[in-house]
Amino acid sequence: MFPVRFAYPLMLDIVDRPIVIVGGGAVARRKVMGLLDAGAKRIRVVATEFHPELPRSIERITGRYEPAHLDGAQLIFATTDSAEVNEQVVRDAHSRGIWVNRSDEGESIAASGDFTTPAVHRQGEVIVTVSAGSPALAAALRDRLSEKLDRRYVKMADAMLTLRPAIRDSGIAAHRRAAIFRDLATDEAIAVLHADGIEQLREWILARYPELTLMR
Image 1 (cartoon, one colour):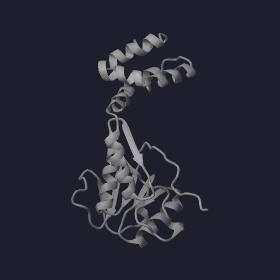
Image 2 (cartoon, rainbow, N blue to C red):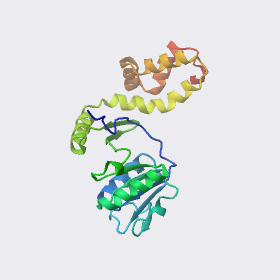
Image 3 (cartoon, rainbow, N blue to C red):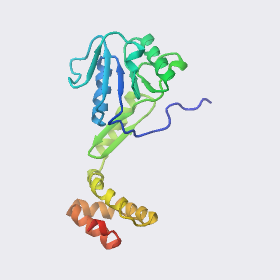
Image 4 (cartoon, rainbow, N blue to C red):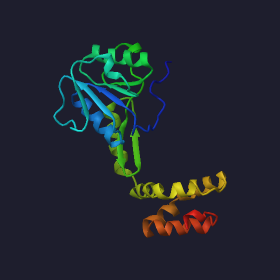
């Protein structure tokens, strides 16, 4: 039995990473929008034509693909409608040791991409991603899961932007910090936040862990 490919999930910080997308059609536009949603600021698109809804703020290089277009890139997407061009992009990326995503289904394993992009649902600080062996099935599962997402968890995830740094930098022992984070993930904590807000949640956690002086 062959091992499953693309089986190790990651969440990447791409805010300041130079990213190159080869191809300017609908697939490229979807990639651009997903990258922008994730905070990417340095995106270069190489194509002979560009989708009319591609954001104007994105750097564009008009012309046929050349290996030099990958200069400085740390993440690459091959999204053209030409299997030959996509294969060349993948080979050039691999020769430079850069991770590359290939959107078409080429036959050459040697020119396959290094990662796939899952179906994504974002709400506040909660990101739900689904990979299911088929983009259509992954999207269907994502939509079903997003319908069932308890919005109180979204509220807690947003609150953690404030609470987590204070707890992390409090100077108390690691095992105590771990216990605090476990308590904040309980139904009781989530109910306090939902009913009374973050200040009441802060008091709730301080009553249990008075050594959190930085939170006062």
